[in-house]
Image (cartoon, rainbow, N blue to C red; front, side):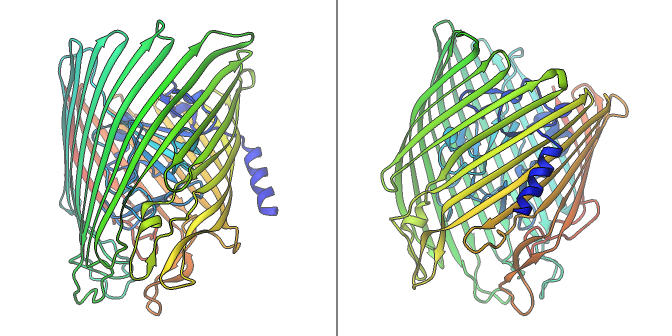
Length: 639
């Protein structure tokens, strides 16, 4: 109780909102309510990272872009290409749903449906929307902690052709390049982007590990994106998207160098979408068919470094096929209520998972789920924004779930305040492996129920003067029916036997003393416990502190620096006496980055990116160190 009281006192003493105003994009549209809306009207923790910020801060991957986002703890097992998990507001690593243009891309063939944040590059991404809190009422299964939507780049409407590209190279024999062409010709628009990345990589294992020899884990990636659009009439539009990504990488076992361990990850995404505006634009209806396919492979033959490999060979294939119909109707103003939007729709999704190999859980299964969803939002007395959402999913094998969310935003402009509050439920469907997987030591459980969560938050933002904003949000979650492997018998099986309680606060400060200088900082407090054992959950630090500076000393030059402190956290600690890990405390660490950009002339830039300037060997996952100091120099054009 004292811990909870401290959190409440802290959150209320620095009231808060999600995104600091001086660095926000006020007209950015995010789908965090019943219908797409602006940040100011969203009753949730929201951070939006724009294309300009991606370039100014030198973000290469999705994991790097989340470096200073409040409420998120990043757990990489090395550099690019290495397995990377995130924990949003203290929830599990498989409780964050990732989408590309609103299409779920979490791989159904992973053991528990978690997304690997160490693979995707950002050359074709226009905007990243990070939404914290339970959002299954909008996105379905998996969004207990939040959702991350990657919005791909769009063609300019005023030019028939524009070319853009980037070429950079630097430490660890790293070469990064991307090139694109986009434009609008009459009623048709197009975008094509290609990306490539190659690096000798970094040494993922911590220097303290016995047998450490400095072996680097390389990474190569190729990404291609094609978007086509046809504006058939003023009220009718069709779009098609095709995205391919393949990465090849080396990796190490926990606490052991392994030079011959290699993996590959190939992902396809395709969608066709039509949207019509009816009743003079008051009613928007759209139909989208999408499919994702992911193929992951690992090879790790026995050798002197790893004589007993767990996965000498493995292959995983996962697919998601989704058909969704969505509608938004803007209703006329009622007595004292304006900006009313009513949303409704339906969808069906088919997931499949197949795996093969030695030493892995074998799965060959599929499942279909059907959904109905609705929501409404509006502004009362031209002041209070209210929103509600409801969704039901009916599954053919686990029974389905019903989730909801209520939210409110109250701006008090005369005092420079903005308050928000929300409460809602979420769920995660048991994965196909958890239900149907079979191996010599574990077997699936077809009677599993979904994991369920109740989440809530409340906060205020205060802008005493236009150049300063203080913000803070208190959040909490109660999760039940968590799925864990139970080895009470051999083989073990997954069961709904765990519960968790989470309380925390996100505090932020944004300052813009002059137009050319922006400073931002955040402090996230997370108290996450196993409600059965009263032990802290692994890889959830109680404190993370992050900050950034963007300075334009002259119009042509932009300097951006970021730093993040991650507090001590519980983890499996690897020692010479217990090589495969015992529960312990992983020490804290700090990482700092810098990016400088010089606009030589309109459309031409030269940039330099420095990573881990302090050359720390901090271990975000025990026994795996962050990459050492590196520098990348390049040029960027937009014609």
